[in-house]
Amino acid sequence: MRDGDSGRSHLLPLLAIGAIATACGIALGLLIDWFPTAASEESGPIDTLWDVLLIVSVPIFVLTQTFVLYSVWRFRMRPGEELEDGPPIHGNTRLEVIWTAIPAIILVALCSYAYVVLRDIETAEASEMKVRVVGEQFTWTFYYPGDGGKEVASNQLYLPTNTQVRFDVQSKDVLHDFWVPAFRLKIDAVPGITTRFRVKPDKAGVFPVVCAELCGLGHSVMRQSAHVVAPGVFDKWLADLRAKGRPGGEQPGGEEATGEEAGGAAPDGKALFTSVQPSCGSCHTLSDASSTGSIGPNLDETLKGKDAAYIQAGIEDPGAEVTKGFQDGIMPNNYGDTLQPEEIKALTDYLVEVATK
Ligand code: CUA
View (cartoon, rainbow, N blue to C red):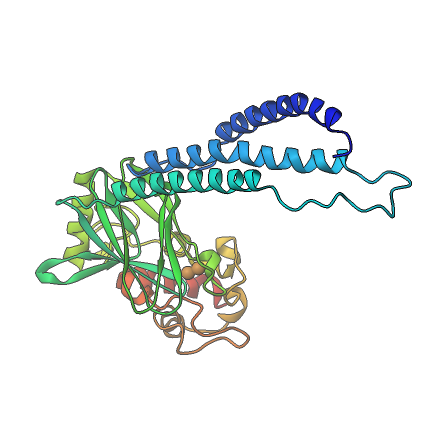
């Protein structure tokens, strides 16, 4: 230092500035609403962990930045000093021990805390429910235990409140990542292995399910919904699903028999076009449904002159005939499994009516 005395005289104002910046930083950090609605028991400890990390990080950030900015200002080159060299400093053992030991202690403490939180939220409960989650380009399918050891598939994720659920996550093709931000937990879906996490939803509502691993052209539309409902509603939904061996529509407790025969309303093709998950409109342009997706072929153009058989085949087995200029494997090929036959018919009829003429 050129003049130790004036350097030391800067220490107090520096500390004051640092303390004020720290207080502002922490206050701001805690005020910001970082996360979406919390809908699981695990959210509490995870959000608290986040707050603690924030409170610990801000002073360190402020400390390092204050020193950097102070040094830049205080030891800047003045006119006439262009050819001068700095003082020959050869380390400072005490300082180095301090700046190694303190971060090490902070890191070990934070890691221990995070480990305890993780262990707590991963504890299995005897009553846990199992849902197998399978990712593929570009959709999720959810498998629930059915009758006689068989599983039933659904493209809707329904969960009862206050029941621990274990997600066994798998992938059919590439890496995906199963994430419900409202639950705060996520895990990679890795081809060839099963990964899992547990969660206990504690708030009824509809929350986004997203893919959090870049998995191809349709990654951004690999979004579905988690419906957290009262246990009674869930039981009814699951019973319906098992009775059909296939998932119901959007509403839990939908009619079991096909619409027309049962005297109820037939599925509405236009509504299905936007409500199916992932929705047709997120990838396809169709003026009648006001959709502008561009990941898949523009249906206003490509369906001109086509018939119902062509359209139905395209929904059930999109890989059989791929529109020129588009890649095979982008459109989920599980609609044939996760939609009811009458839903596929309704969608087909709707498309015949609005897109083929
Ligand atoms: Cu699947 Cu991104």
